[in-house]
Length: 399
Image (cartoon, rainbow, N blue to C red; front, side):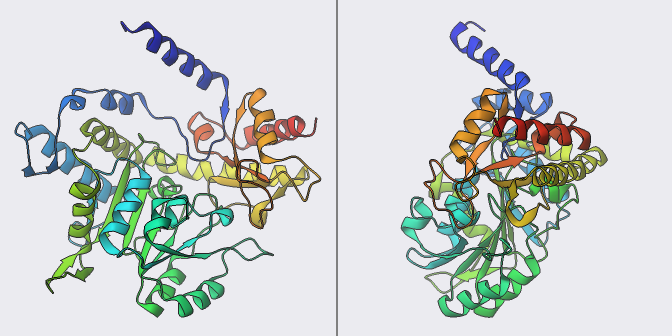
């Protein structure tokens, strides 16, 4: 590389990744093939529009690429092309979610999403996000005792508020979501059911977590977490779901979402990114990936149990996924999430500070940390490694 400053930073980052243990729940390690696709000549091509309907010429390869990526996405999640559509152009998870809102919910209408402290994402209607400024969030949380979703309470809120859309799938909720119950709740008020499976998409693909597709109207996901791809996003939608336009005709969710992505929010898609997603989707459609996904969950369960045995409070008392939420503050008897993450980083373990249910502290210095096992499982970690890691985390934080 001629640019030695950038080359040096790349090498330094490679070294940092090799030297550290990454327990960031939203990170993973991609294959060399994904990296090659990301750095391919597709970077040079501007492809505004959709396959067969581009605004620039020279699209014979980009059209084939985008169609192939769509086919692989549907195949991976066992979806019929007759019943489901998928948009692969969203640049990342947040604009993917925003696109769905723009497509299906009028400004000012109610969207029901989990509150941030309880495990929800900013783009599920939080006030600092555009989704909370344009739409009216009706928040729900978790049971104060079990720290799990109370579906009866969610239903009670829905009956009163009657939201236009209900969002499930979260950024810091470690337990399995009952999508069937959410479907029943959504049907009770005629709401659209959107599932953001960004964190557990790879686990769904690997059959280590229930699939939301039987019950959801729309499913969004990033591709860089448990799915082990580049930073990008997918938006799945049922072809039989429609809304009435201002002219009175019926338009499918899929068509509305495509228009919201382009030209509503974005210009030309990043074709090199789509190429890398296509590679990752093919890698995930394999027996080896299913084995990987199941190991991710095994590792998380062991890590959570070992930390609990060492005296740490684990939110909801455990996990069903790749994600663990640890209360390090413990009513003032421990340390803050900021201090805990700083201590761990100094010792080569990278985590993120995180709010927890019944949070009493600032999001910048909250009461907990979030751990994830997807990245270290990619590196070959097994249960015995999680036992050692729990002890090491405990030793660092108890100093």
